[in-house]
Length: 319
Image 1 (cartoon, rainbow, N blue to C red):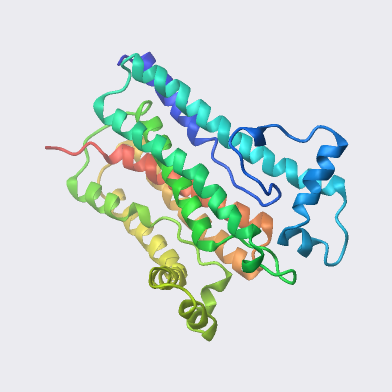
Image 2 (cartoon, rainbow, N blue to C red):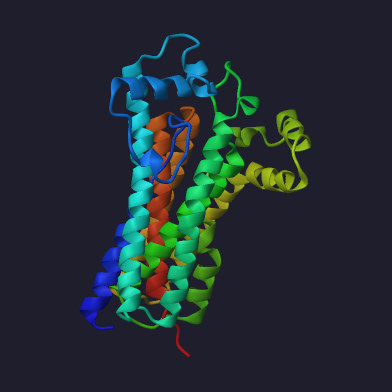
C-alpha cells in the first residue's frame, strides 16, 4: 500500500471512530428498516405518543407535570437521531471496508481486525436494544423513581463502544504516524501492561461499597453479577491506581530518552490524567450534574486517545 492509500484508510478509520454516540428511551419499538421512517402526520405522532405512554419513563415524567406532544417530539428526535447515526456509522464502515478489501488495501492483519470490527458493530446494535428494553420493562422500574436501563447492559454497550473506538483510532493513527525511533523493551512492556487501566470512574455509589445496600443488591442477583458488582464497588480504587500508573509511566518515560513527538504525547497523557481525576472529584462533590458528568466522560475518551497514541509511538521495539 502506498502513502496515499494508507492515508485514505486512515481517514476512514478516524471517521468511524468519531461517529460513536449515546442512547435514550423515547423510542419504544425497534425495527431495523421500518423504524427509519419518522412520524410525518399529526395522526402518526399521536399514535407514537400513545405507545410511549404505556412505559415507565412517561409515567415518571408525568407524575408532577403532564408531558405535551411537542416535548415528546423533542426527546423522540434525539433518540431517532442516535439510531439513524448508528445505522449511518454501519454504512460508512461497511461500504468503504468492502472497497478497500477488494482493492487489496488491507494486509492480512488488517483484514482480521476489520472482521472483528464488523462483528462488534453488529453486536452493538443488538446490545443497544437489549439495554433499552431493560429501561422499558415496568417490572424493573416504578413510577416513583427515574427509569433506568440495566447497569450491566449499559456497561456492556459502553465497553463495546470503547473497544470499537480503540480499534478504529489506533489503526487510524497507525496509518498516519510512524514510530520515530526505537525505545527500550522495559518502557514498552511497562506501558502496554498498564495502559488499559485507564478510566475506571468511581461514581456516586462508590461510597456505599461497604454498606447493607450493596449486600442486598448482591444477594438478589446471580453469581456472575455478584462478582461483577463486587468489581464495580472497587471502581474508585481503580481511579487512584490509574493515576499512579500514569504518573509512574511518565517518570519512566522521561528517563528513556524518547524522541520529541513521543515526549509530547507522554506529557499530554500525564496532563489529561490529572485533569480527568480533577473532573471526577468535582463531579462527586457536586452530585454529578449532567454537564459535569458528560465532561468527565469526554475526558475519559481523550485520555484513552492519548494512551492509544502513545502506544503507537512506543510500539517499535528492538529485536
